[in-house]
Length: 232
Image 1: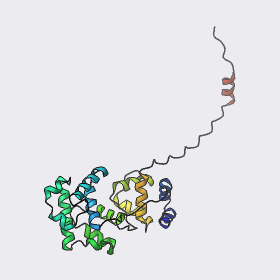
Image 2: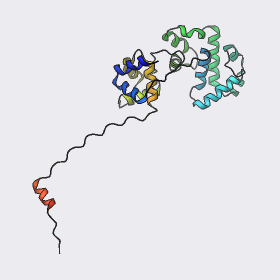
Image 3: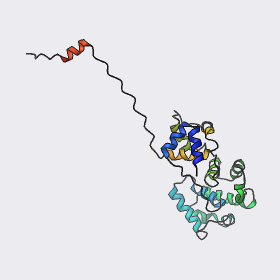
């Protein structure tokens, strides 16, 4: 499925070719189930939480609506205390309600985001409280499957770039974008490989060839080979 992207990355960037060989076959996949709205709600719930904790809270939120994802209107109609009881923080309650308000009044064309280009989607999403550039990029990548997204702010990506390219310091987001120019138009697949590379041990460097031993001088050789005299 991603054969063309992998082939391009390996040919255009030797360092990325090593990352791909380390990780193996590409298993990148989009989350196609559900609605765009629910996907964004899920992203907000999962912010700054472990996967297990976020999954539990996400399931509790669904339980409030008959074990299904709520609509924007239903979220706005739910009192804050009920959402807090499901495990959402007060900040995230504000975020999901602001998202719902944007979806209902049309400021965020949530049902047709897939019809917009990447820049328009980014602009629309970051208008919502709690959704920044990183969250918008995750939507582009893992919901819409846009092929050329490089999440330059992501700490994991920056660490992986530092390791893969042998950089002494953690690269800045601007440096990640500069390096990532050679991945176009498959930045999304490159980013997936970089994330996965952190799950593998860094390939060990080949040991340096041993230096040949110097031959001992004839004088030292005779001294070493002559028997020691016993002292009396």
